[in-house]
Image (tube, rainbow, N blue to C red; front, side, top):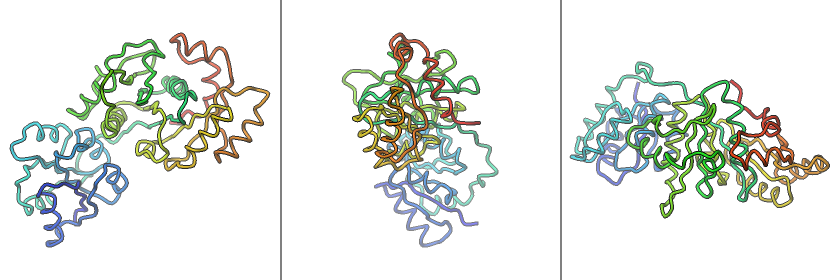
Length: 347
């Protein structure tokens, strides 16, 4: 069978040379020239091999490991003489690693000689990803993510990640140390492709990766946050992400098994949620209405349906116990966990 190949677009000569060789010889079938990482994910069902250069910033060990978990074979290309770049490809588990002065014909031959995916033992179990987001403001994303993770943790290894770039609150909410944080985790994942235990803080039944509150540092690039998520899914049965406010077409959101949209049960909260729902491009979200006053339940539910087009999946009551737990670094309050119980992903 002719191998179906994707290349990662590169300005270096190896990529254009490989494309020409593939077209002239038809020894491999070129299916995709990827510019963004999600393009490979979207077309993975049509691919056998990915050929990627270490000069591309998002071709990291974690990304390579994620491709291999999908059953793809990987040929890594590194700038000739660049030892660290070569090591990153090796750390990710690339099947073959070649310098970029390798003739295109030899690269094609290497692709054809790779063992089929079925003959290679690779990790096939990937934890489910639950992504909690919502419009800007403070609708209760962190508390919802914490309650969902807490409710699931008795049934499997659960990791809770704080990827809220604007206002990472998980460490403060739980009274945990600010380090190790997301940046520490990303650095390890970037070098090794795996999430090291030392990057995870234990809290009760959960493992935590807290957000970065380092002053004066730019937020992590999206592809590095995605790498941390991918590595976490290889380590846990369930990964819950407090994603902060995200656009509806965010690539991380598109890759979630379950998306939860948290909105405050107020006119402003519903209008903000409606804007986010209008641009939604990921899996259909489960709508959580937070801080619901009992006398207004039917009115709020009707307004949510009208403005967001979604039936609320959970109604979180306005309770003093929920607020008190959040302010005192305690586990999520029972009324909140009960309200969210039906949202928990099933085994």
